[in-house]
Length: 400
Image (cartoon, rainbow, N blue to C red; front, side, top):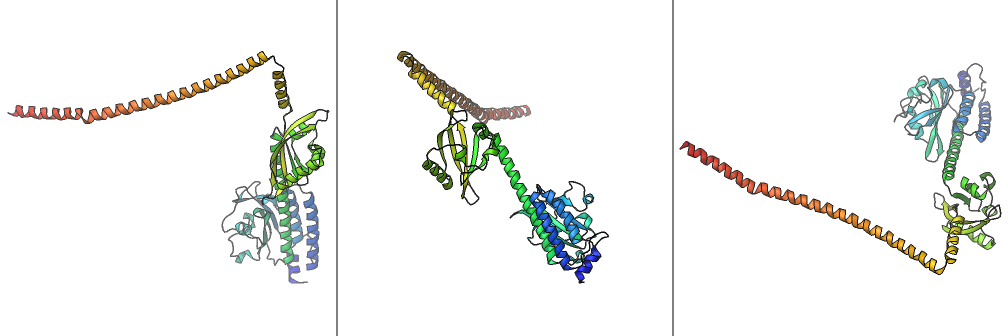
């Protein structure tokens, strides 16, 4: 039995399965990874997978501690996500990320950070968590949810000195990758739900399609307009759901526009389920990825049927009027326009008059101040000087 197997035996607690060889350890790691991959496929949140991962890591590596710590929104602290010792930290406690801490060092490294002996560690000053005061060896890995955005840290720690094998380090890294994948998926699902909620607030029908013309988004207004719930519309060819074009050539040109990333507007007559027809005004906008390449299109569907019917009824009513009545109607319309123009002109004159009054008042005030200064600087000063001279003269006469 090699040195590592002896360490595994020494590190084990009563009741734990002992690893008798590197082959047995690798087999245990393979079993754990297989189980965690299956759990990842059904996990709905990162926390759900993290809790199972912590249990499997402690059981497989025979370590004393295992934690998944999530980066807080301020990115200056960590929050407990899953702990092998849940009672060791108060729920919701924030752990500050100090500049020279193990947490900061781990988050700034893409490779796992392996500590052979904390007693001689020089890269950072203290273990990851307050209750790790007796930890000697550890592996910590940054969990990446996206290329440039971390989810948090996965850490395993032992109170006995360990020489972790490459298989064990790779195992911890793999688990961190799985948690990161679920975190990224969770973020994407939350974003989709938020966008879907925002689209449902919009009163107009909003429909998004991919480059093949398949429906990828269908808000509540679209369901109300076309009488089809989202679950029956999503994934289907849009032209099979909404027959915008009877001509196949026009349909091909429509899809070509979508693929070219063009922006345009058009009106369509679309049959209703009851037999009547919508008159729709549809505005098309391209969907692009971060590189500017087309991904599809989003369209806003406005039912202008009532508006067009009202305009048509007004025209028909005007055409059916007696010529004298029609002329009188037009004269009233012209008089109304002139009245509105006169009201607007008077409003402008009132504003101009108000401005003239303001400027006049300002000018009068300036003139009053100028006269006051001249009076003070001229006659008043002369009178003051004359008074002083008379006082001196009176004093001289009294002395004589």
